[in-house]
Image (cartoon, rainbow, N blue to C red; front, side, top):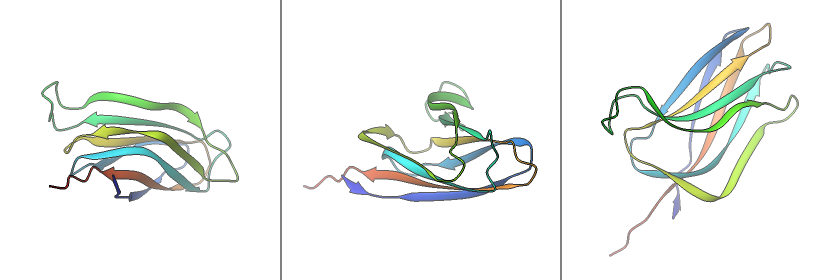
Length: 123
């Protein structure tokens, strides 16, 4: 396995929820990530999903294939880091979706670092 970290960022308006989608363009394995939020609210929470927005697998566009974090409350004074001992495969064309709920009276700036890996095949 070779590390192929990636990241994305977005802004979530005050007192609202937003879906932030990141497309996996090449097959990758994920074993975690780090979420960094500026202006986090007292009850901000996230859900992380794997979504087939473009009907890559033929089950219909927009189908949620997996939900590996659901309504997970965020720590106020620190970033959230999740790293597992085992990776999960994500095929090319699927999306990682971060559903962010901002409970603060100001906009939240959300940054996410993904711990992605490539399975190297040597001949």
